[in-house]
Image 1 (cartoon, helix red, strand yellow):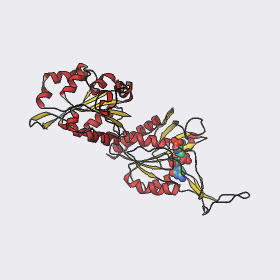
Image 2: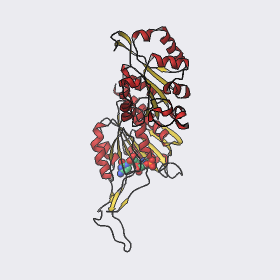
Image 3: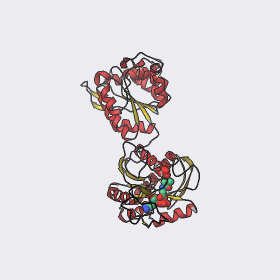
Length: 404
Ligand code: PMT
């Protein structure tokens, strides 16, 4: 997801820097747009360094020194079409008036008119400017148009006066942005430990036993967890995927290494989700040197550690969600694993089906808890991740009712 963060000229402009970081922590890409007056308070370089993106400081890419061309002339349209929300922090009386009247006099005000994305404004200004009927009328116009206003706080203002006009707390601005993005913060305060990808069991220095897991299901859960406000610990087997930047990642290879990482992190977690396709068997005695070609050969396999069983032995109050990859008797086998592995829920996928499950962007699963069976028909792994997290939130709520 991508947010355009409009920064206007005001003492509170520096606070927008922290908002860039808070949004990025939730897995959101941030494109900063600064008005001319904002640049009197904070240098664009600060936002460029924080966001990792070029900061837009005006129309026609004038600051680059390059000749305006068709790309720079329609950059506001490209940004307008690529964003999921426009968030303006701090929103001055001037920008609110321009938004309300539809005046497109710079990049930010032009973007406001050009985008169909939802808009959030966090006003900050002098108390008299805030209370002026013109400002209040502009706010009313914007409210009626569906713009979300993050009300300013009251207190001592930079101008020396006291009253409403102080920029709302950063967390309130971010919560409004996330709500607008449709990403509620219902996992805020939770630490989710996710395992993803395959494991590799060494045969000799150049060969190993593994499976077709790409890690996509686990990485989708990690990203979805971050967006919903959780701290995410991702223990991943080898994959070609880039983990979400805000996740705390431990890369492992074998089932034994995954077990060690999971047990080390378990005390920090309140929720464990095990999407990893862990080896059931490992090589009893891996060869020190590359095995030579010869006649028939057999590999001596020994059971790999059962990580879920170990989690169940060591867990305190954590909620444990397993995944099951089945090819026959899908629901019965999954229910069996739910019981035998002492899980709170199991997400089962029929991995014999084409186009879903292993190494695909799509999946079709059934979420089984001790009380419910919830089918999730074929969809993206992102959607599956959201449904699994909905179930996690529901189980958490039930648990807190029981404990209260
Ligand atoms: O990675 P992708 O390409 O996106 O594919 C996703 C997936 C198909 C791998 C995923 O949706 C999935 O089904 N993951 C579980 C795979 C699996 O190992 O299923 P299982 O039925 O063999 O194991 C049941 C549970 O026990 C799993 O939570 C597994 O992590 C756990 N397990 C298994 C073996 C073992 N030694 N220790 C374990 O803890």
